[in-house]
Amino acid sequence: MPKWQKMPTLNLGLRLYSPLLRRRGYRMAEDDFAMDSFPDLGALSDEELKGLIARHTEEEQEVSYRRRILHGKIDILRAELVNRLRKKHQEGETVITGADVQQLTDILAGKSAPDIDAD
Image 1 (tube, rainbow, N blue to C red):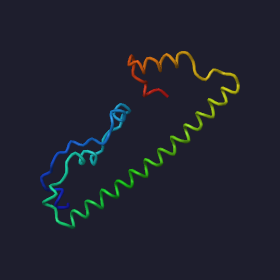
Image 2 (cartoon, rainbow, N blue to C red):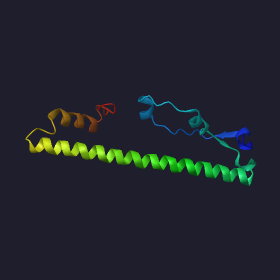
Image 3 (cartoon, rainbow, N blue to C red):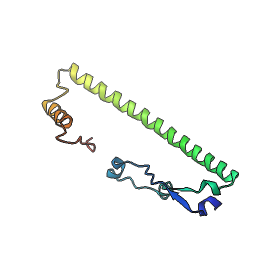
Image 4 (tube, rainbow, N blue to C red):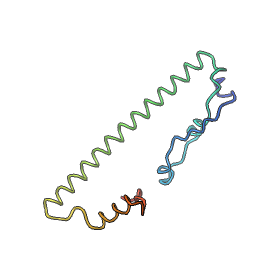
């Protein structure tokens, strides 16, 4: 175990997950809790500091890659939804109903929160 993992830490109170993820059943892994504390940087050797930088840089690259993948999937899903709505409109179906307009009005007026769990 590296020396910095045994040293006293500063609690920075970082939380890397959102309430939305919590509501959808996301459970933090053991490593996620490790992000709540940070080593005493003054007690680290140059090599330990470089290792920590390398580890966090690699983790950031992994997170960035995952984010780009998710953005791509979101773009594909939105394009499919737009195509379906366009098709419904061309076939003469109502794309937006009065209920949709009322729900949006209520949300904008602060009367109700958007339903984030709706499919």
